Length: 330
Image (cartoon, rainbow, N blue to C red):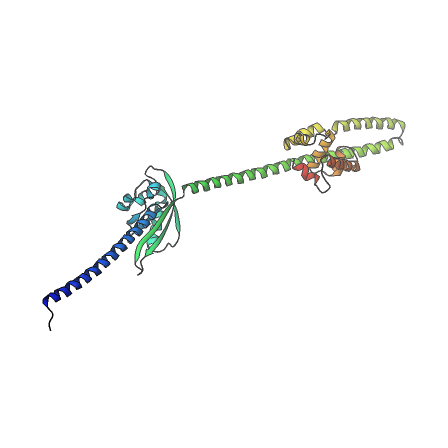
């Protein structure tokens, strides 16, 4: 029994309705995916457009496919200007850096630069000098086809200025340290000159004192006329010794030129120090031994050692402290 023509039309209508429902469902799914893709694309666009660095995508032939709007903050030129004029990026590079900038891109396109950065300078639209750091990476699709370069340019002007200041400060500190060392060497040389001069006078006085003692010891054994001449000679020797006796005022004047402010600082800290204590401090600071000091101030070495012990007490130093180093630090 054959179907009635109306039944065939009804079956066809049902089939069409099912196909329509399937197409509507597919259309809904495609619409949902398109909306999702548009949303995702918008999110990525917002992220890319609001990055702080100047990011870009350069095609294999050297034209910009995309440039982030942040290029304007760094250069004063818009992303549209860089896209429409591929040579603009080379035109704003500082003339002295253009050669290495072009060489960098040439090496990148020839895959000779991997993960290396380039520091260079640019001139902005208003002709301000900016320091930049460029980093590029080759981009490939899943099949391995070369798609161009993904690059990022960062403003490092403040960093370079800070580094310049640090280098300047470092150079100044080195110079100051050298000057201090030279000054200390000069002071040490002058101190050695003073010590040498003092010791020469000391030895000369010791020789004269030795001769005087011998003359005085033998005077009474000589004939009377000669005794008178020896007595006159001893008087002249004593006068000469008094004239040649070490002058503290002259020494102090020279010492303060080499060690300015030493006595004033010492007296401010230790008001109980006597003039004799100040003399002893100066001699000790110069590195003179107890024996040498005793000869300069005409006392025995034992007395000079006692004077050192008393001085340590006045300076409130214990036995472990080095007296010479302490005085040189004042």
